[in-house]
Length: 177
Image (spheres, rainbow, N blue to C red):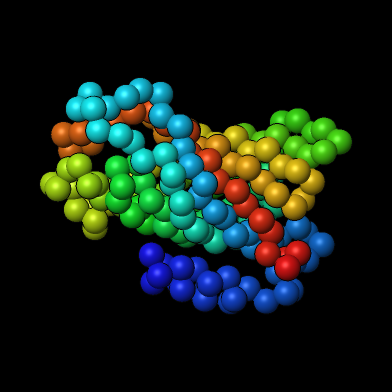
């Protein structure tokens, strides 16, 4: 994890202050905080629901089919639900669907690649890559804090049952620091 954290810090340092232009581009620090699973494991072992991790996310506004959206590129690492270190990289798109005085609610999707090593399944190696497309919901408090909920479907992967889950992360724009 120290190697990935160092890489994330180095990558975030590559974005000069000019990236925070009037167009709304920014670099966010994303922290994994936990997950909630919809079922128990059939073998009685626990899910890890303390999914601590760190990522850097480059965010830029854009349009899709004439509608304003937000695009992102993400690189990070998180302790997964089977107690392994997942490394992920990909992109996302988000569309604001509701604006309220305190912030916004957005829906979107993350698409990318990830590893998913498992303490429970030694057949799954730490360098096995999985392609993912995952739906997301984001709730913002102003432009200072973002709570992301990523929905992970139930998937049977290399002999393990799996469970549908929601992964929660917090994002903080680095431009404010």
